[in-house]
Image 1 (tube, rainbow, N blue to C red):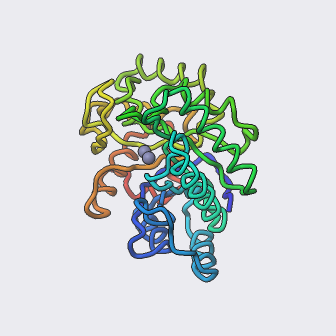
Image 2 (cartoon, helix red, strand yellow; image 1 turned 90 degrees about the vertical axis):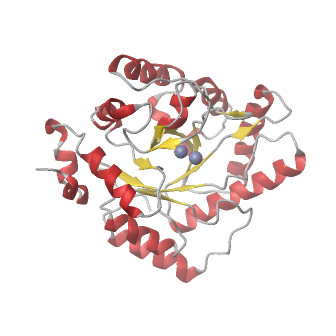
Image 3 (cartoon, rainbow, N blue to C red; image 1 turned 45 degrees about the horizontal axis):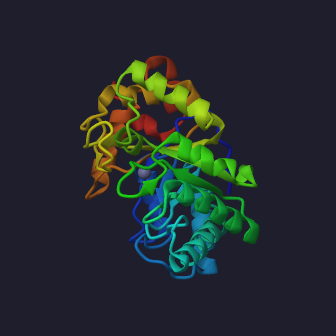
Length: 305
Ligand SMILES: [Zn+2]
Ligand SMILES: [Zn+2]
């Protein structure tokens, strides 16, 4: 279900589904989240268990009752819709279509996925194949969930580590109303886009606006980066404990152009306690004149007097 996005702080974390999908909403709620991310199935398997009608309706009812707004799902890491291998490619297109169907069944607003890996092909070939695959998926399934290309760190032969890559994919998508971008702060930093101080922060967003367009930005993954700027290494760190540092996140939390964009933590954790620490830190970075955004949400419990 598309919940109305009021100007409130949309902040949450990736919630495990080991106990169940409905329990992921309950966990998010216990943390005060106003948005969450889930896997709708195991992230390391091609096929998921079919969702029963009762599972689906329990999830939707729980979502409707909760203060959690938009929910996003992260697709399986196995999917590579830019693969030069025809067998993997077909399997990936089928899997992405299936993930989109699951999102639609559950009323999940967004499906985030890693664009793809070039492997032995060129980046350009990979990018064209990704766009072609998305068009096939869109042509063969009608859904209301939006597909989000996630920015990558550029590890291995992954594409999606420059804003130009995203632009070149989006340009080729026939139905642009169904595509968007999820910007991962750790990934773009590792890819060479600095966010750590005001000047570089402004430059990075100006570049994003110029090349991709902010209208395509539908979600942000909030992760600090354990590795350096341009390292191309994807290692998530706790907020303020990595190379981006507190200042970068303070800028994000107070940026009016990002107020309505759901922000999701994907920081390392053994339990929900680590999420609570990061959420508290982020909420307290919201400056006085923007506090209204927090006060309307359960996240206000983190505000330190
Ligand atoms: Zn991801
Ligand atoms: Zn991410």
